[in-house]
Amino acid sequence: MVKPQFYMSLLITAGVLFLLVTGSPLLEKGIGLQGKIPLGNLITWIGVIALPMTIYWGIAVLRRPNTKFQVLLALMLKILIILGVLWAPVAYLLSGNPNFNF
Image 1 (spheres, rainbow, N blue to C red):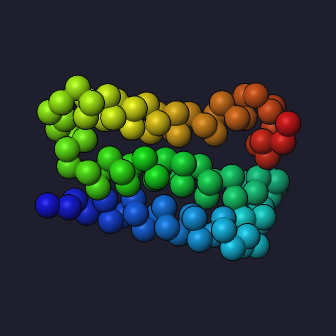
Image 2: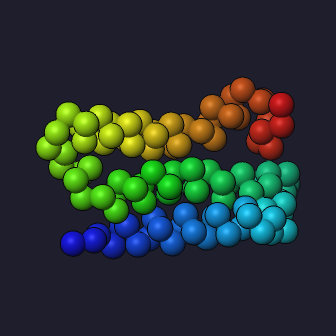
């Protein structure tokens, strides 16, 4: 049975992809105290997390792996999710600014 988390992740992934592919002006809208952080940074960060979550929740075998290959795939997805969560803080530390301009 497909979990509701799958549908939520799929909807977020599709929404983020739509905004990125169409080049929506929403991506350039400023957020934050002084409006210096582009909303696109937050939207992309959410998409980077939502894509592997969609795969994880969409394929039940990866939540309870049986074979070594499935264990490897599940581990890789979990690593991708962790890296997705860390993307914004690491990009901020590397760039030194909230716009992630290098």
